[in-house]
Length: 237
Image (cartoon, rainbow, N blue to C red; front, top):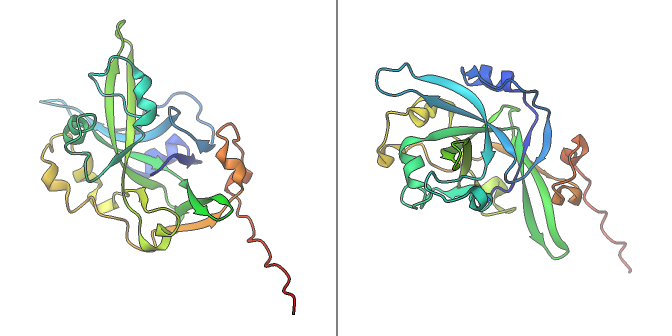
């Protein structure tokens, strides 16, 4: 599961990191609590037939709306696609075969169930790089022909070092597999089996953060600051 993300990198930084063209004209401010239906930066390749394929950075709405949907309301429930079922599930299978992308993120939040309630953790790359989440994107048009581009993040089993927080985590595409994953001419799901594997241990670092992140209206840098573990109670002898 991945229900909240953090984006502090600029579109220009993302474009440079992924050797892509930045198509984003508007100012994108850091977002410390990205929730479903918010826009997220994504890297995708477009071009077919004799057209030159171009790698682009675009803002996509988080929550995939299939091209055949009657309206976009259901997209808020399709922020994640399980790797085990994405190639065959009706909502995702066409995108999996033809419209794959990278959802770029600086980190994400996950909640651990404890005896005292749910404790949020901030999980981020241990090397400080931009995370390259395996994503799917779709193009949907309303009755007036207005285009909505949306996306979902593919999830898999969590690596051991963060699995104690939650058993699922976003799937990270390694740098050496980016070209294959983004290739719009590749349509056979079987060829991605070697790419779509859980992140290797050590990919992520994690620490506890304030429960204020649970309210998506809260959005400020302090949300990703670590909080100290509570002191153990005094023992009576």
